[in-house]
Each structure stands twice: as C-alpha cells, then as structure tokens.
Image 1 (spheres, rainbow, N blue to C red):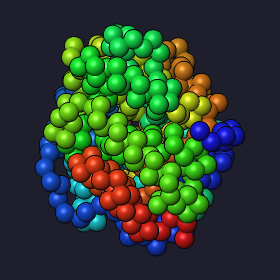
Image 2 (image 1 turned 180 degrees about the vertical axis):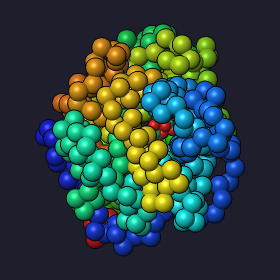
Image 3 (image 1 turned 30 degrees about the horizontal axis):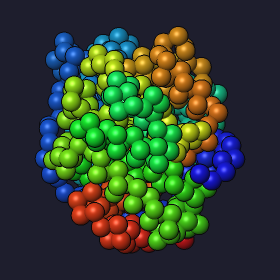
Length: 448
Ligand code: GAL
C-alpha cells in the first residue's frame, strides 16, 4: 500500500469539496421516472400510532427498512414525538432498487422535480447532497439553525464543510458510517485454520482457498441488483491504490484506465470466485440472513450498518477488522437530513432537524444504527466495543470518502460505476468493466 501520510479532516474535506465547480455544470442525477418497484410509503410505524386525527404532519423519506435502521430511526421518532406530540410522523421509507436507496432516490427525484418535496429526506453528506439537491436550488440553507443549535461547535469543522456549499451548510449529519469493515465469523475462519482475519488481499485469497476446501464461501455477496459489488470495489480500490491514488480518481490525477484500476478489478473478479455462488440472485436484504446461517459465508465486507443489523438479529458469532489492505484508513460516509424548499410542514421539519442534530438524538440513533455520532460530545457510555473502536479510528485514521455512499462523487457517476461493477460481476470481463468506468469518469468530468 502507498505511504499513508496521516490525512487530517481538513484535507479530507478539501478533497470532498473539490470538483464543486465542475459539478455545477452537471445535470442532476437520478432517472426522472417512477421507481421500478418496491414497497410503498408507510404511515407511521410505531412512531405515528396514536397521532391525533387532523394533526399536523411530518413526512420523512429514507431507505431505512432493515434491522438496526428501523430501530434507530424509530428512536429519533420517539424523541420527536415526546417533544411534539401533536405532529403525526409519516414514515415514508422505501427499500429496493439499484444502488443505495435506488427506489427512494428515484421517487424523491420525481417529487422534488415536480415541486412536491417530502418534508425531509435521508441524504448522504457530500456530493450526493450538493450535486443532487443543493446546486439545482431545491434546498434551504441552514446557517441560522447551525448557529441557534450551537452545531458549529459540536460537529467537526470538516464535517460541516462537507455539508456546505458556497459557505452555507445544507443538511444536518446524524451519524458517521465506516464503509471499510470486514465482518468475519471466527468459528468459520478457525475451521479453515485461520486464527486472524486477512490483513491483505493475498491473505484473503489464501484463507479463501482453505475455506473453499471446506465447502465454505469466503465472501458474502448480494448482487441481484447493482450496488453491493460497488461497495466491495471501493474497498478494493483503496487497498490497491492507497489513499493518494484513490483520491486522485476524482480529480484526474489517477486515471481510470491505469494499471492500478485494472488490478483492483482483477481482485474483485477473483474475490467473486469465492463468494456464495448464487450472488447474482441474492438481494442485499437476504445476504444478512445467509451470513448468520450455520452454512453461511465466513466474511462480509460491508459498512457498519451491518453491525446494527447483526445486533438487531441478536447474532453474536462475528468480529470485525478493517477490510483487507485498509488498516489505518477510514472510508467515511454520513447520513443527513435537510430542509427542502417548499416543505409542506416547514416548522415541523426545523424541529426534526433539531432532534437529528441533538446530543440526545444522536446518542439514541447511533448505538442502534451501528454508526458513530457526528457530534464530538457524544456520551461514550452508550456505545459498544465496535463503536468505541470506530470513534477512536475516526479521530486518528486517514479519512477518504465513499463512492458507493454518496460522499466522493455525484449520483450520475455512482449509477454508472454501479453498472460497471455489476457488469463485471455478471460477465467477468475486466477490460469491459474498465472501459465502462473510464467512460463514466469522463462523463463525470473528474479533474476538469
Ligand atoms: C448507506 C446508508 C446507511 C445504510 C446503508 C444500507 O448508504 O448511509 O445508513 O442505510 O446504506 O443500505
């Protein structure tokens, strides 16, 4: 791996903020049509039951429908309901589709373009927020709220800058997630003679071979729609290119047709040989059930919402380590909520954002979500062993932004990137996938 000069939060922020000019030229994102399928918006869940008829509402869009996510969101709703008992929360959570929140993002885009925004919606801090919603002029800036709530002092400065465009913050970060975590089942690794999780991809393949001999898939993969392999690939890109090489992918310094990217694609292609063989018909939701099954895969590379999910299942036979080749690096993403222009219940949204940014809110949400708080003053007694480690790493590791989860690049690039990695997973044609990535990077105008 390349030398890892410690990149501080400021440098990380500068990286994420970079390209805003080019991005301004970019058309905004997702397909305008209706979502391809999936669930419907639901009213309330636990949080809205008992709301008085005719009460004022608060409609919240998210793609949080899995274990850990639901409980965490409900914890925020519970706090809100206590403070604002007359407001009915309409929980418009929508799962499914290609990429993270694919269906939700498509529906959101339709509503936003049609001038019918939900009151507030989950959005990744970084390019997803800025390019998809701020530059098109559909959000209200939040300077006053940041000032009145004291957030300028409690959120890391660099995080605020990621939330900012033209000097104003545009959403409220509710958490910090880590993308590059290897979740492993010690009992399965031991069965294959491995006492430690793999530190490098070479280690990974050695262990994977031993697992194969025992009939155990090494890697859990769910690629029935595009997205999961995009997550694996960002982890492999960081491991292969190192911090500087990875960062350079988005400012034109690292070429997408370079050997390093070829090598990373080859690594992903090879890793898929050790995945659950039905990964092309396995969904993101299903893979978690498979992972905890007695005959499930030994390892999974996925963000730490997986921790929230496994905890919500009461599953205990797992441990964690940085994804192979990424020790000392924290691939970061953050979920946030903002205030769309024309939100039907503006005052209710402002109060919602206050809850999202509050210490109580973050300390209720994050222990369940698997993430760590965005605030610096969280009550650490509320967090578990994994999360305390993540809090420490967030403060000391080199931070790089996630592609798959909206921090590094705009949504239009992410869509193309997911198609390319899905194509690799389907056709195993490294050259073709690389051509698709090169074209995607050109279209995104990286470095221009
Ligand atoms: C991420 C999101 C997480 C979690 C995950 C699961 O993009 O930031 O909060 O929901 O997707 O799909």
